[in-house]
Image (cartoon, rainbow, N blue to C red; front, side, top):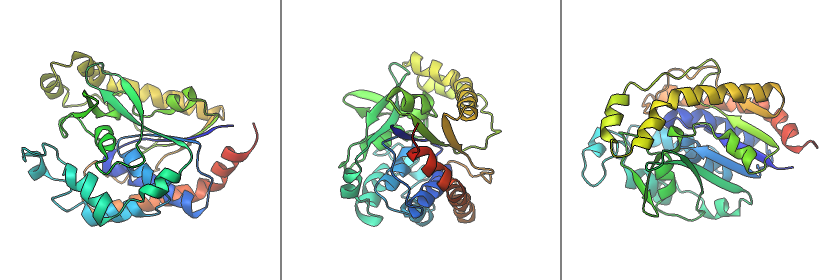
Length: 286
């Protein structure tokens, strides 16, 4: 039997998932054999796999209001061109300020993948997360929200946020052989995505990448269909889904510490409530 964990993105709203994963660590659940995440889902998720409980909560509550971490001043910096301070967020913080345990991450015996969207093809790609990368370039690519990040190049190819093409990669977990898949969402169960209001700006900014523009045009429909299929599998007992009852209006760039702490707590309580069920789901024989 092969177990899987799927982590949806959502930038700072993903603090909900961190709460869930911190509860899993406190409950000493077995680690999944395979983990795949999108955007902040995997950028935060690696702290779970390195067993660094509450690291993400400390990071966000310490630096969300730090202009070096996020803010439009970073975007207008010609050496950065991102709403997030790329060097500060992906190098200075994990390597110096809130140290990431690369050795513990390397010791995780399972497979870890991040989803990215190839601008040339408009398709999702699933790339293994390097265990020792002080620049965290793949994590930058999976988190690269269109219009808020520059395209991140990996092996010469331009990439943006994996959520553009595959926002909830549960199918990938089954494709690589997982039998028991736990999916952590960052939107309420009744959420329905609408077509992005920035689609015209996206079409203009990425006009030399028509396949990517088409992916963005279909993004809401793909997302909603993915959730519908996921909930159908849940009813069949093939997946276990954890979703927030209320995201408290938390935005992708939330700076209200009360909201961030409260959403982490909602995630933590959700994780505690479901821990025994997850343990049984991951350990009972088929």
